[in-house]
Length: 393
Image (cartoon, rainbow, N blue to C red; front, side, top):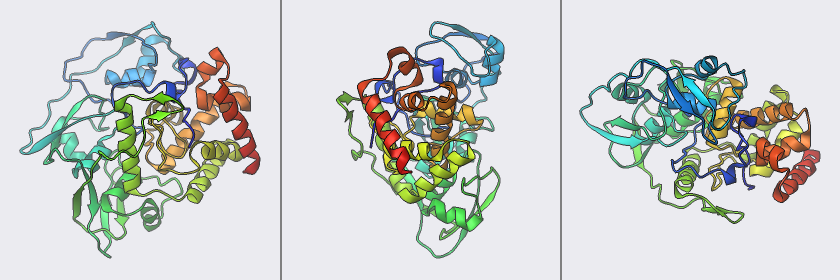
C-alpha cells in the first residue's frame, strides 16, 4: 500500500503537502466523509468573524460555525471554487441558537471524532440515528462536529458494533437520514452486495431516507457485540514519518470498522473504479492505475495518516470531494470512496489543464505543494509507477 495523497482539501485553496505530511491534527479522524457540524450550544444571532488558518477550507469553517458553504461564500463574495487564504478574515453568517437536547433516562456519552457521522456512531453503540438526533437536539440533517460530546440513549461506555443474530429469515430496515448501505449491512451482519441484490439497487448502492430495505438473513432484533478497538491494526509510521497518536488511533478504528463490515473483493472494487471513472468522464485506465498504486484495490486499506479505502482518501479530502459532487460522501462506503477519489482526480486534471503527470503527482503530494515545491523524489517515483500501471489497465 502506498502512502495516500489526497491532502487536497479545496484543491489550490491550500499549499499543504500530501496527507502523510498533514496528519497532525490532535483530533481523531474517524472516517466518514460526512464531516458535519452540529449546532453550537451558544446563541448565535449575529454574524461572526473568523481568521483563516493554514489548512482551513470553506466547508470546514462553515461546519464549525453551523452554517453552509454557500452562505459563507455569499457573505464574503467568494467564487464557486471558494478560494480562501491563510490570514484572510471571513464574515460568518450564523443562525439561531441550538435547541436543547431532549432528556433521556439512561445514556452514555461519545466525543465525536473528525469525519464521524451519526449513523456510524449509532451503529457503533447499538442505537439509532433518530434516538441520537432526538437526545442531542440535532437538526434534520443530523450535523455533528469534531469534539462535540453526544448523549447516546441507552448506551454503555463500551464500544459496540451491532450485528444480527444468525437466521435464515429476511427482515426489513427503514433507512434513516445519513445512513449508508455499508453501515446497514454491518448493523445486520450481512454484506453490501447482499443488500444491493436483495433490493435491486444500482452499482452505486444509492438509498434514501425513509426507504424500506429488505435485509437478507437478518432478524428483527439485532444483537450488540462488544468489539475491542485496542488491537493495533495500523502502524504509526510510514516512510520514516511517525504520525500523531490521535490520527493513528482513528486509522485503527477505521480499519477495524472496514474489517468488521465486510467489503467487496479486489476485483469488484476494480470494476467499481473503472465504472465510476467512465461515468464521471475520467480515463478508467488512469483511475485504476492510481487505485492499484494506492491500495491494490483493497478497500480495507487504511494508512497511518488515516487515508481510507481503495482510493486512500483522508477525511479532509473526502470533505472536499463531497463539495465537488454536491453530496456528503462516506469514505468507508466502497462506492462513495471511489466517487471521492475519482472526483478529486477529475478536478486535478481540470486544474492542471489536462497535464496527467502533474495531476497524478498532485493526487499524491497535493496540488499546492507541487506548484510551490515541484515534485518530491518519492512523488516522481509515484508518477512513474502510475504511468506504468496505466498501460496495464
